[in-house]
Length: 388
Ligand code: SOE
Image (tube, rainbow, N blue to C red; front, side):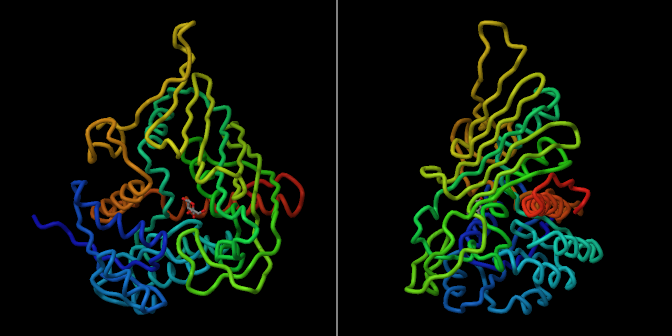
């Protein structure tokens, strides 16, 4: 039987646009799919840039207006990789036009907007997925299975850090990720969003939080128009105010009684993309570090005395999550593969009429924690998630 074709319209063509394009391009080469993605249309405001991206990434056509894209009859799925302040309008427009929606994190600039987006997609009856791609790293999916199988017992601690250093130079210019009106927040929404989601996935729902934040460099050069790409940009002569946090740290309690610490910063010299967590339970511990993303450390309290210690599991065996589709054991995979796994889960869910995970419900729950931390900083107190 011919596979169902899913026509994709992608908004955005920079760092995340490229990662998503690559995922659609490669997914059916490796995974057996119930549906086939068609890289139909890529959309961006700058015609020259989007036209070049369409050619380079393999999209059939391009558009310069997302409103036209979402109204097209030949699009089934709208994928949003534009900056955070554009998520709400595009996601709502796409859902109202009957399209399935896939959106980059964080879902919105605040809880009220995230809630509105969720209401609209649910009312429209479309599939929705948020791109918390680290859930799809085989080692993390394996950690989830080990926890669900009871291998580390009752969880006591989650200790998460997401450390970067790409803006440590005070002369690095103000790109959109440093502009509150576009990004919503700085390291908090960009990096804590990921580790909050991982904590929810692996430990459970949050109960309450208390946090602190710092903006170390309060003023920076402006960005020369057209020079932004990924995490690079050129400075102009003018200067402007940095309106987001450089670092946000917080403590949390989970509903199941576990406790946690979180730290997100863009000022950890030498830490380029250090997304690491440790989970301690009554029967053992699990440690993950994105810089060694094919590995998972596991400690079992029941190992014989005298032989105890952390063992290193290579999460590359064909029996590990997603790894059947790739190479023989220990032929490692990378960052871009997490997007392929995410897109695989999304397309399979659409083909089989199920809701992909993580969905916008997870996007909203993450936003509630993000906003609760901000409220706790503003009001200098513990904030319960139920207040949000
Ligand atoms: C930049 O901080 C960034 O690309 C984030 O936006 C991503 O979500 C994260 O996966 C890596 O770092």
